[in-house]
Amino acid sequence: MVYKMLITIIALSSYLVSGAQTVKSKSASNNPGSIPVVGYTKNLSDSALLDLVQKQTFRYFWDFAHPVSGLARERSNTTWEYGWETTTTGGTGFGIMAMIVAVERGWITRDTAVGQLRKMLRFLRRADSYHGAYPHWLHGETGKTIPFSPKDDGGDLVETSYLFQGLLCAREYFNKNTQGENQIRNWITWLWNDIEWTWYTRGGLSMLFWHWSPDNGWSMNNEIRGWNECLITYVLAAAAPKYSISAEVYHRGWANSSQFKNQREYYGIKLPLGPDYGGPLFFSHYTFLGIDPRGLKDRYADYWEQNLNHTLINREHCIRNPKKFKGYGAVCWGLTASDNHRGYGAHSPNEDLGVISPTAALSSFPYTPEFSMAALKHFFNDHGDKIWSEYGFVDAFNETEGWYAQSHLAIDQGPIIVMIENYRSGLLWKLFMNIPEVQNGLKKIGFTAPNIK
Image 1 (spheres, rainbow, N blue to C red):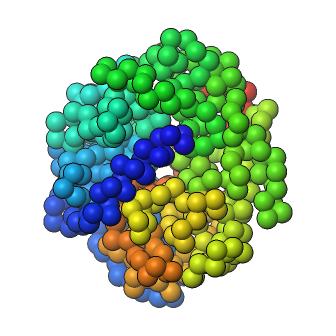
Image 2 (cartoon, helix red, strand yellow; image 1 turned 60 degrees about the vertical axis):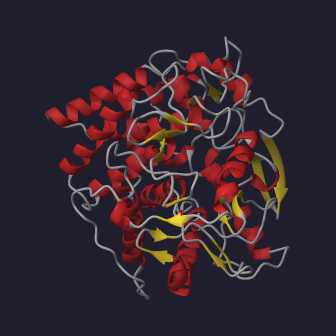
């Protein structure tokens, strides 16, 4: 995970600091059913504000869906080396979950969503994949791999798991006996069955590996070990109807790491798992868009306690503000991976540049609803003239540097919509946890929870 994040930072920083150009919505996919823009208006009720943030953030996935593939574009800006054709597989999975929210809340019709999903699935059936796993980036028109880094030019098992977290939720949600919805379910199942999770054990080793490509093989050598954002990868690998991993791979691979168990206190708050101070907050978001952490336990941790305490440590760090950054406090908190004034970074208490990323606090709504609502009101009421846009909040800001992003990233926008919805209705948690294969996978590797039957 650390190596992958370093590659991400190097790849993104090099062009972001060179001057990215924001792409306006006139270049978007012209999806049917336009979603109106709501400007910066103070003093909304809590419910109205949540409605607005979810709906306007969803506009990112609607306007920035690629017109040919329907997949989510990586971000809302481009540079000379980062084209408009670049779509993200993991961000698309988050966008599919957001699309389910959009149907449920009436922002788009069910039939419109079905049409969009059919477009996406037709494309994915023809796109490059590697033993069933998709690359991090796909060319939105041709379906060919766009290398994420010089050797990252093949299958990316973690991004694939984010994509299928979304697709499996869609298979569960679109359950009507119609031609379109039957087709969606069949296509998702075929793609899901084709992922060769066991291939990514590199010949039967007791762990999963992040990457493989026909040109570079296993040369990236990136073992997927915890604690980080990749628990969903092991759960889906154990859950797969074909090519599933054994429980031993989970226990000897994922849970066998120097940064897995922690059990120390930070700011007086115990952290069961993970690196010192917990790392960036997306560790508690990406896997748990679908996996319900309420009452979820295995031999290593109570995952509600893990995610709650991780969030509280992150917030407490911003309150204590040891580096004295401008603006930090009880209502202005949240450190995670995002754009910054230098380019891009995986922000955390140990990697603190003074950058607040709205997705961090807003995607933590299920864990800290009172604190997240206070942050939301602060972001909107006190900074809305600088950070509120036609696609929700911009990616990040740094008051010390007087810097406010102009960009939006799919992997930051999606969790805002989905985790607010999980806080409000539990919709995506209910869908994902009801999938028979997911139930079997969780039980196989030793999880218990009230909703694991």
